[in-house]
Length: 358
Image (cartoon, rainbow, N blue to C red; front, side):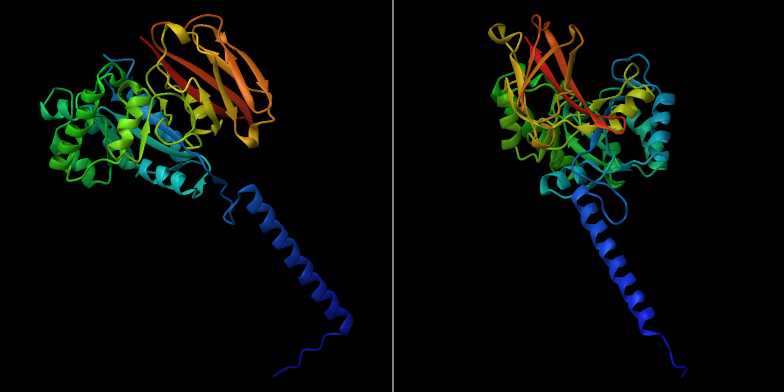
């Protein structure tokens, strides 16, 4: 066996180099952990973008429809970009347990179980192995309404790994019905899900994205893990898991630029929101709207808020508290206030809230 001859100065230099190299590696790993970067180079995130669709290629319903060409462009962009498509249930589970998600995680959801989901969306999503969730209102399916999927088709989706969520029995405006009726909507639909697909959904989507504080409490009592509205924003759970946002995609708001803004978005984390209830009345319309910024963004003064009727709104920030003032009342129906803040690298933080005015 040959003998290895290394001079003492050379050996010391070699040892010093190894020690320095190891110290550098340890330091880099420590700094990466502080920044939320894993050894695989993936940013460890605590948020995800949730997309919402309804109809596919049903041009008679432009407010809820997405053109097939638009949808295919969305899927191509998600497939070819630096995005991770996760099932919605997995996203919620990670957020609730405080587990890291990949940066730019996206979940795809579809409301109302229209037949075009099965005919148009299903083959395109399956071709890319994209997971998705379908929220179902049970009565239209039970009655065999034209344009809706059947229970047999919903069972096929479930067998293929699609998560089935609940959207009540009749898809009502839940804040406009009595709490007894709202409770019945949840109980009857849960029973029908058990009978038809063998399990009760764990995720809920408010019909029309509408709810009030009483409805939220009923949804919690019904045993759901989380609930989703139709207000824009990045899902993170900082303010809880029963008013989670989704970006609605349709013919008008389904451009690639808007999709990029959504899937590249960052969370604008707030809590202590007032008014707490999104249903307004004559006494609090316009609302004295405000919230407290999360500590990591509390010193940022670049918050901007907008409403479609009034445009850019007055924003006053005192410490971590932001107060937004409107020049007049919100119009009857649904009204949204969207707030954004630069997040670096051309990305934007999002927080949206939908108000209901009887």
